[in-house]
Image (cartoon, rainbow, N blue to C red; front, side, top):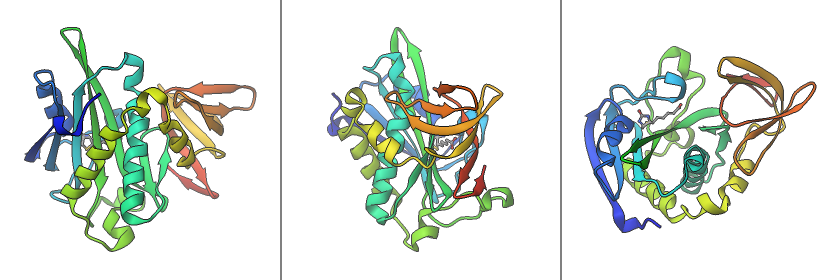
Length: 249
Ligand code: BTN
């Protein structure tokens, strides 16, 4: 079990992507590495998207470590980390964030954080890189994004200290790691879901599935009631979500 003392922090002024940087160095380390940057020039989101990473306006960090988990655990880190970050935000803001399966955190119906988990294998060892992008301070987003994303400062009028938030998230990530085995985080993941009970359109490898999201199972799979069957989705993207009769893409 990893200990909080085993964490090595690496701060960069600017980098293409903290996930890419962490991937390059983690295979030579036994510690948990936290790479965080003031700014990313090529911040990456899921499905090849860009993640806006304006200078000193957010958390752009990657937690990387040699994995003592089976491969099947690796994708669970996205759900686990969502519950960790979501709970830390709730604790510091006294607000109630929601998790949009599988990797997005929402505050007041706008995206505030995204998580990108990657893994690499070298010399028969596997390494996990969990990337976290959290909008902290007010900033300008492209017109297309403005109505869909928010920042902690926009929602609270408080200028949170980015490094303090990073330390809180890393601490909580490590002290709760046992939940990866016990799957306790799934309870929180379900409670915080803004998807269960909603009609959804899910894109899975360019196939669209329509139905009602009725549950998230103990492996974090989304359970969907379609017009004629119940299916479980391990990975994909919810492209339409009916939240209180408002369409959110
Ligand atoms: C998403 O919204 O689809 C996931 C966004 C993940 C962004 C973080 S920022 C730190 C780390 N480095 C990256 O290039 N991406 C992740």
